[in-house]
Image 1: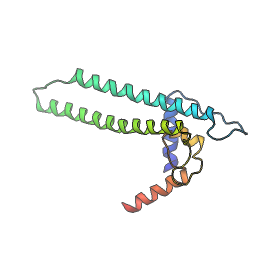
Image 2 (image 1 turned 180 degrees about the vertical axis):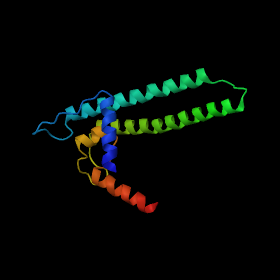
Image 3 (image 1 turned 30 degrees about the vertical axis):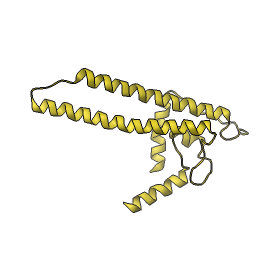
Length: 148
């Protein structure tokens, strides 16, 4: 399950216009070039989300109409509610992006918060805000399922 999420998010990263990082055989993990690669990826992603927030605000201001028909009014309110929920999720994602950028600045980015091992370049490209390696994330998901 976690692997499917990683693949879907990798596609999103490519959509943002970033090419996968080319690893050299003797390259040290999370060197300055890799940190810069991920900083650019995160900043681009954040900018894209912020532009979407601006579009939503303008859309809601421009399209807000007081429909006399209750059904039309309910449809508009439902659409606005859905957009606001989506923007709230994106707001939380922007916070995670900012936290990831802070970890890059502190040179802690790319290491699992649970066990300390390298998360891996490809996983980070798929999910730049990842804080757990794939093994710890899988265990976390199993525990979550068990708790219900």
